[in-house]
Length: 183
Image (cartoon, rainbow, N blue to C red; front, top):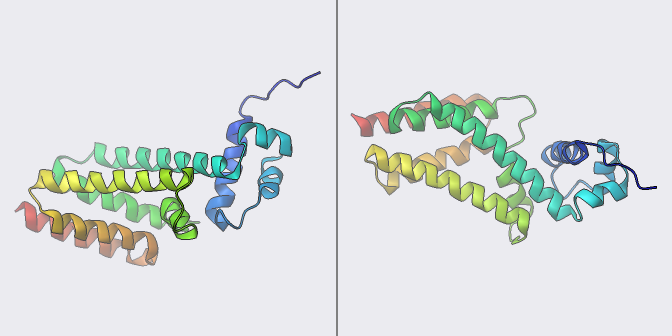
């Protein structure tokens, strides 16, 4: 007799894998570790995620949804492109100060697999391209040029790899850049 699927099993597996992938890196985590952390059987894992690449792509899509929700919430209260740019960088800076922060999930994946063209790499690159497009759009609405957008994007990149105690420096620098442009 076939078992009835337990509601939420896919999410349980994905949550367990996401925690492991983020903490240790995708390359370092084997499917056996995911099975153990999720408390499921290997067959159940592979029924939901036929390959590690599919599980990793799902993890990055989950990370994208979480980042997009945080970004939307930060931008919701900011009025105008200058304030939105500051709010965006402030939200990123705050995320880098959270306990357990280990860098940007998308940048981490692309660092582990620099030449990858698989589904997870496509998810990671698409998120980064869309994030950069948001910065470019806000800078354009501000009346800024490509150089300003490049500088802000470089600051965002630095936030993800720099020490969390310097996060406020990034916020202050972006504030200075956009306010100088806005006035």
